[in-house]
Length: 197
Ligand SMILES: Cc1cc2nc3c(=O)[nH]c(=O)nc-3n(C[C@H](O)[C@H](O)[C@H](O)COP(=O)(O)O)c2cc1C
Image 1: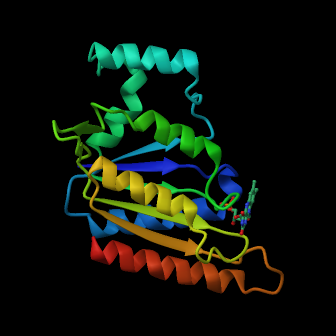
Image 2: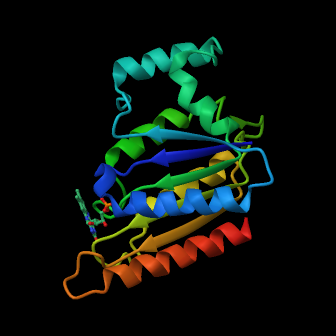
Image 3: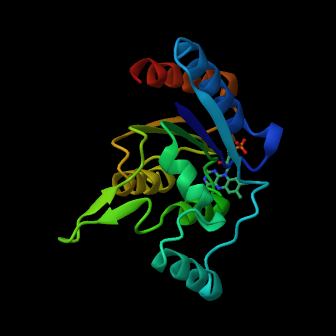
């Protein structure tokens, strides 16, 4: 079984989102100790990926037309399709997430590979994972502007991933807030997610 950690925590070791993700992975490993899981991480800060432009899109379309799905271009899409559980860790940036995560998701979202349209035009997601968790931290309260998670939730519906979970630590940059208590509450939420998997 494959666990895929998509790490969009751009501040490296200083990232509080990364701290929550490590807590998630540790708890997941403990909960699934009796099962055989392999763990892979996509470090988006280090990833050499560019947004699609005219040239790159034409290249990708040509590969897709000739169904060269084993090309390096589709490596990230193949990896997400083969994952059994996915964790996305991304700080709350500009009401969503760091743009490198969008570039990654653009890479993964391939018609004919990640999802296939039926003759009636209905997309059928090809991802093996039944669940994906999205972990974030935010400087203020996210309220109903949870665009990063909501976008990922929409993509999951397209990719065939049935369940999504969300854990956050919010208001971390507001002076006077009890940051350790907020982080501890997020860790409790993570425990509840792991228990429900
Ligand atoms: C580029 C950038 C954009 C941000 N945008 C928002 C925002 O829109 N709303 C918010 O509440 N906090 C925002 N923040 C604050 C972060 O969400 C907050 O500090 C978060 O905990 C950072 O996560 P990290 O510790 O994992 O890097 C932003 C921070 C950065 C660096």
